[in-house]
Image 1 (cartoon, one colour):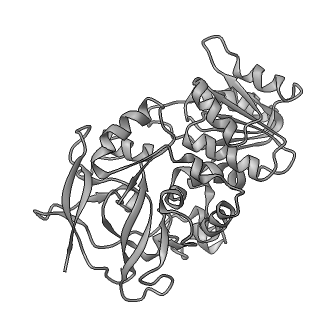
Image 2 (cartoon, rainbow, N blue to C red):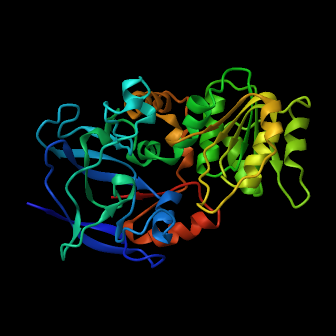
Image 3 (cartoon, one colour):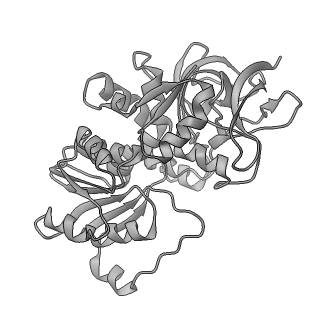
Length: 362
């Protein structure tokens, strides 16, 4: 029997979000029904609302969530009713070419629930990133559930479901930041600050935060930034990074903005054999022009980071353990807790740079 629950949808492109009643099916084979306890308001949800990801309206928004498994379908063995889980959008298939080569964090065929959640009139919903967690309950593939220690509050644990994991993983997994490295992070919102926290966690000796907003730079210091660069109209970001790294440039530069100009700053702001990591999401129309000789002449690595190249089953429990042990300040990302009816306002606050994360509690 379908479950009637309150949820937040984007009905049409750029229309205000709505709190409505939706129907969530009982789980079928390979699926799990999850009672959502908390869900972060991520910029990706705003992209869905604005039409920046697709046109499969209406969207069921929300994806950065944690909760309790209420029921599972046939064939599910990894999670059971009562398990406390973080939801993820990389339920690896185990069969694609990436998985077969032992690189499941690149899985090209991730799983989602087969059944559709619907409006009361039967209209099928498109869940954000295959999750749809601005809802009292949601239906996902069981592989999208990662069991973690229930001592971690859902308001904190759920953040690993997207933005915080993307930033942490960009530094630790993709950028392979190690002890004594110098690191620069361009853009100090939630993802950028998570990259700073990741670099700090592994012992980077110098972490440079770069942003246009003094308030964000102050936040960056709380996550481990040792130096800051406040960007103005005349700021030469590359020169500032070089000045803070003995004239060489940083070993790893992470672009958490995702614009051609910030990527170029990352490219030229790294050491000659340094690494560039792009984790900020560009728009479809953005183009990059760069002298090919500069690419050849500088060596190093140019990488993109998808979801922080994470493997949820490997990374989530470890990061929660580090949080509970006081080594990873995930709680500092939570700027406020809100209800389902305050998500439109939370989008506005995010756009104005007033919060790192608003978190919906249910």
